[in-house]
Image 1: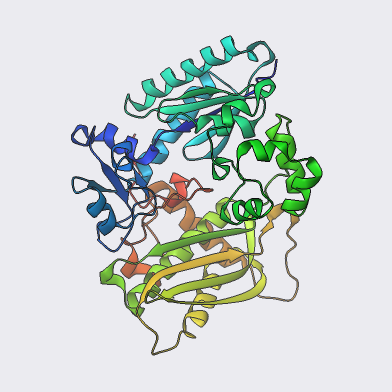
Image 2: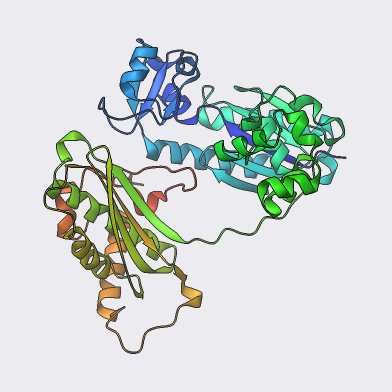
Length: 415
């Protein structure tokens, strides 16, 4: 029994959700954008648009040139998150109780011993596919990979998209992978691809022919050993990821590309980051900001302090950093804030000789958080972000699925 894991990858997830929501988009080339402006780029594309060469990161103008019929839709992140949770809840209840969420559109699960054969595993895959269709709609599809470890199962999930089902048995590898490029292998980015080519590793067969020692040398450490083992179906325990920062960023639409509005957006993002930090029960010991000025110049500053959860301290430090921007700098186009050097509450010790974490301020932040969770994140906030209260929409990053309770700016639905 060499089939131990099943990996599910939702096909063009954002675009599929929009095609499910709006029948007029079905069968049409669709580009999902963060805002309706020609200066932005696609964050997702439907398969009909991908057929014309449109992909994630394609500029709107270029996408329109590649595919004149393309329809652009502003991303509805709250809807994508709600559908994600419906899918996860249904799959864990009816199909596979123990799964690991990898991202908004990917999850992986270990197969029970009695299902670790091709017949039972593929039957389970079809049951998961039917469950997703039932709770999300027929236009939200998935591709599934089954393999001896999560690494190969993930590769399999991407081999026959959309609506694919691929089984990779470790006993006949690398055969089924021969048609892939090296860059299709998870963990081989552009730099590593070039390094492999310099070592005369050009194909998947070449990669499999490398000894463990050679891959160790190419990767420059144990990651090469991991690659060697995972390519052969071994299960490697990866260290649990430790949260090191909470961040938010926003590309400014044209009407906000001025110092006053850009600061208001950054102020609002800092407040949202602080609320997330408290929800995670962590303290932050640094704050850094980054601003893209014009299209070529990136400016940034950072500061450190005794770890805290207080919004007022973060906002005070933000104002001091913002004041250092050169007065003759070009117009800001993008702003980012990072709360870093995190300490979990379990490892935190209150300071003896500092005004940080004033009990009154902590209570104020807690009260504001409670009201915003109940009535929507724009219910109560610090005035510096007032001008941007409608201009910092929720975003989904590859490694972060927003918490609707703390990050949704919309008023929660009634009972």
